[in-house]
Every structure is written in structure tokens, then in C-alpha cells.
Image (cartoon, rainbow, N blue to C red; front, side, top):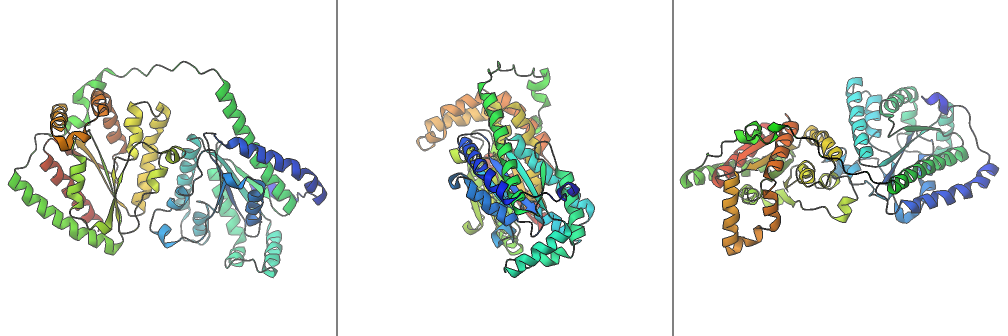
Length: 494
């Protein structure tokens, strides 16, 4: 792959100086046109040591409007980053729609270095590349424009570049160490590029020996990519919108309640008040001790609470947190996304909330909104919520691989029990705020939500993040069931 980047291409200073003003003007025009667009631009600057990656980043910042570009250099991990899954540092740096993000270093750096130094085998390296390819595909399907630049140097040119940087005092502690492994770095990097070169996220190997050629080529590639995407966006905006497609015919069994996973939940289960108090105290005591043990061993936990309106999620969460030191957990209530959150991939706001090592984050509603309310209410297209199952599984697998314990609860109640609780909320003054017109409207779509829940559990209950279906008609039983599940999974993890 790199042979095409070793042809000795150059660009004279005269030609560079003559062509640069026009390139810069067009780049700025394209950058201004990005404002208000529904897609972000992500520029990945990678390549050989001494190939001028830092200079390219400086040049792009010089050529672009600083108000619409963010630059992030990824090198050594901070303690905060090390205590979370590897992709956390990249997710929180993602540019919003209509903006450009420049990543100096990326999710490629660590896997390549680990493979070169023999810390991973080829099979493990390929699995990491599969994860990268899936991640980039997800970003592209969400509309992101990925511009991946690889600056390449032949071996002799790299030695010369490093010597020059050394004289200028600008070499890093690893430059010469990596140079001794030049051939292996080249082989491993070529494998990475081949594995992750995709139609929506192609690689651009750039011959980096000549500074003028390198910089002008980078600017041209970025300009062409943005202009092409802007033309596509304009064409879609001016095209006559087709009539909305009729929803696919639902199989007759879709509303057959006997076919739903939820109908296998025994809602008759209940506890006496005495039995509840005894079980509650026992499980809360066990959880309190386990939380400090998890803190000591730096094991994090994530809890997800979903369920029907009035199912008792809030009261169940309170019985769990009663057993937890307030310093060890945080509750994140999920509502409709803000403008900032709508400018990002839907998973972005959840990645940002992941706990540090030894702590717990409790999500009251979660990323499953994409396949529940967004699906049923039409806030997400069938293509968007259809691919979300795999995106969610990939997300949760990354949490699990990092050692985070995942507990997911769907609190299930019957329609009759929900109606009883709705009426109770209307008659008790301090509960009236809990009942809204939206609750009644959602109740009319019970069967649609039930089908969505069935699909959610079927497709997203995994060995590393299983769903627990909670029998919620009796709140006492539900609270104890949830506590027992958390205690069991935490004990297994520790």
C-alpha cells in the first residue's frame, strides 16, 4: 500500500506559493458552509514519526476558521482516561454536527504500537481492527465525514527527518526507538490500513518527504471531501421529498401476547411486609460491603433502569442507593436530548457519563431509548433504530471488556396495575406531578412498546450484559429482586 507513497513527489516553493491562496480561500468557504449542516467532519492525522504530522495539524489550524475547529492530540493517557474504556477519550472529543475535529493520533495508535512490540498477537490485533472498522462504520452511518490521512516516509527519509528534528530539539523519547523497528511498523501499519480502508472511511496515504507537496495534498484532500459532502447535502435538500413509505406489515403474531418475552414474567410474585423488610436489610447490607470492595479493587459498575411508566423505577433506585455511600455513585436521569446532545451521535451523551474505576453510574432511562421511545414515536428512522441493536451491543461489550459490571433492568407491570397506579397518582396530591398527558398517550401504544421491548431483550441480552426482567406488580418483590441481582453479579465480578 505504501509503494504509491514512495514515488519522490515534490512541489516547488514557487508553485506552492502560487496555488496556496486559492486553496486556502476555497477551504475557508467550504468550512463556513459547514455551519448548520447535519454532519461533523473528523480528520485523523496519523503516520510515520518525523513525517510532519504536527506541522500538518498546525497548518490546518492556520487555514481553517478557528471558531469551527477543535484539535485533540492523543498521546499518553491521563489517570482519568485510563480508568475508563479506551474509546472514552475519543468519544468525549467528538466534534458536533457542522464542526471539524482534528485528531492528532487516534484509536489506531495504541493497537499498532502494541502489535509492533509483540504485546498482542495477530489474531488479537485483527479483533481490535474489527472494532475500529465497526466504530467508523457507525460514525459514517450517523452522517460523519471521516478524512483519514496517513503520512508516509521511506526509511532513509525518516532517518534524515529524525536527525533534523534532533538538531532542533524536537524529537520525542520514542522516535529513535520506533525507527529501529521501521520495517515492522510498516508491515503492521499496512495491515491496519488495509483492514480499515472502507468506502465510507477510506485511507489517504500521503508521500510526506516534501513539505510543500505534503501540506498541499492534505489541504486538497480535505477540501475535496468537504465539497463533495456539501454537494450531496444540497442535492438531498433540493430533491423532492418522496411520500413516506408505509410501515412494513406486522406479522399477525406481533400482537399475540403469548409470543412476547414479557408474558413469561410471573407478575403474581410478591413478598409480605415482614419478608420484605428482612430481605431488604440483608441485601442492602451485602451491597454496602460489596461497594467498598469494588472501590478497593477499582471495579466500576453501570446500572440501567428501563420499564413502563409508573413501574416503580425511581423507588427501586432509591432502595439500591440507600445501601451505597453517596461518594461511590451518581444517578443520571435521561430526558429528551439537549441541542448539544442532538449535535452528536446518540451514544455520545452516555459515553461521557461512564464512571471512573471503583465507582457506579446509575442510568434512569438510557441508550435503549433509541430502540424504544425513538422507535415507537418515530423520532428515529427504521434504519437508525434497526442498526442500533448492534451498536449498543458493541458499546456494552467495550464496557465489559474494560471490567465494568453491567446491570440492566426492565421493570415489568401489567396494564391493569399501571392503570391503578395512574389513578392513584391523580388522587394523591404529592404524586400528581408524576402523571402527565404523555403517560396516558404512551399507554395507548402499549402493544407497540411491548413489541419493541421484546426485540430489545431478544437482541441485546448478552452474556456480558444480560437483561433482568423484573416482576414489578408488587413493588416490594421488585426491589428485592433488583438488589439480589446486583449483589450476585458484583460478587461474581469480585
